[in-house]
Image (tube, rainbow, N blue to C red; front, side, top):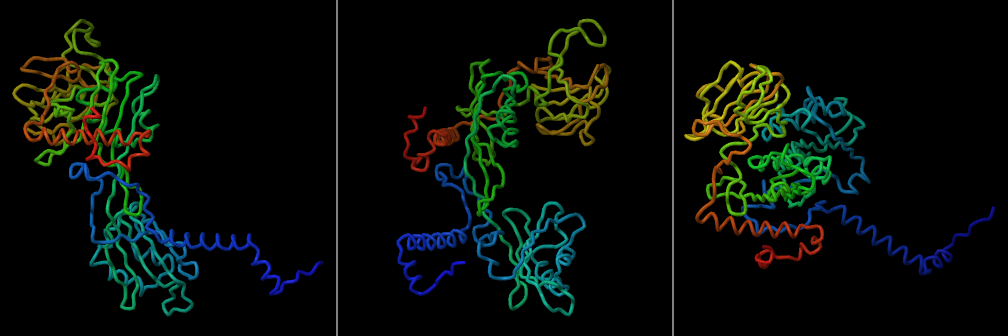
Length: 475
């Protein structure tokens, strides 16, 4: 076996070689960069265009700007040269701080001291199973009179991605503070085209749009669009909404829908709605002319329900002869919640032959609505009860003369039954006066922001000052 001769002279020759020097320099730079990056906050939130939307659209909703959040992720080199160990423990039913710490070897003295320190800040009895989490840092003990296996260094109670209680061991005992992070947001654009054999929901989900954004989309258009019958292949939708993050870049979910549009080929019409907070602080959605999207009544109380019988003359499925059908029947499983189509006062709740369990609501001097064949009523909804639009008043059933579970829904205008699917309903509120000017300015900025977020335009997004753009160019 050949002996390798290692001498100072050989080492000097090796170091003198250019490729070795390049390697050594590159390694040193990489190590330095690695160390610097590891100490950063970890935020990966891209720059946002904020000023143009303040205060109506806020891209940063500060919870507490005076307290710097503490990341739950240790630095890369933390613990590399020490024997500190970290545990992430999910709180389960029946758990307590004492039992969870005891299970990993923390002694009674440390448990008592940290509990006394935390209690003035947070009641330990308020731990939420399956929601809260503990981050525990400890060091092993060789000897202990109380048979403790580890020494408690710090304890974090994680209540949410933006709120935690932190207790740290000091020379004077445990010190506890609250840590509240900011909530940051960025605007995201989503869009899609309905294809044959798919629904709007399926297309939206495939584009990564969150379910709660889709639900809001359905809600704000539900006064004008029947999503079960008005949507056809080729129809298009667009939406701009917020995505929320904590200071350390952790995704918190989606926020408000700022803009939404829906083009229906069958009507040759595009519905465009903008989120706006009026002078009274009430948030609503308005079309481009400032007309409110919310109407006095909803044409279809149960979103997505199939129509089993339309308004007009028909052969009665039970009686067997032709009779005027004064409402629209929506097929739905027994027990499906029935929301009030509009705000108003319950003027009848009880049994009517043929209709079964029946509720009638008077909304104003012009409109009333009726709901029949319910399986049961909501217990707190009685004659005289003032209900709000969307409030649950009962549940789908098949009482009275009925061949299966469904909701029979009627709209009565000036005492005369009208077709719920074709009646034109007034908006609850329209903007006027000074509000129109403010809304128009915001609408134009939202339109610009939506264009900026286009994937083909996004590379220029951060170079644009919205206030400097000629709005007329986008009209």
